Image (cartoon, rainbow, N blue to C red; front, side):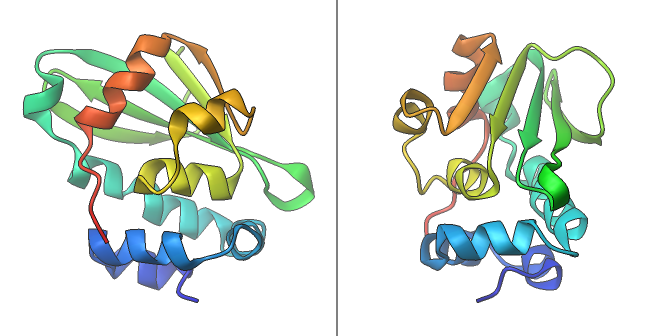
Length: 149
């Protein structure tokens, strides 16, 4: 299994998706609950600006917080994806108020961003919690390229 920081940093988008598809929820939880959690999360969030499609977001601006649970001792980590009129940046431990907050365990989070899970179903089953502008949540799927494995 290739859920290690080095692989996630260098993997192509298709390799990333293939890894998420083949990893079990338990393998993902174990990897993101261990000593490499921060490096793994950094590697995943570093992909957001690369996958951003400015032409789809247009001149919109938005701040989306992703809280990923399942850390050591029940901890969670929050990153913000900040879209601002054609640009995309990521903030670690954000302090500004988001328009949308999404909260998920590591397996659900990876499935969401890799496009291998059904966001509406995960939301309805309570695996992803959303607060704020839910219309923005549906737009996110078009703002970021979802690679095919």
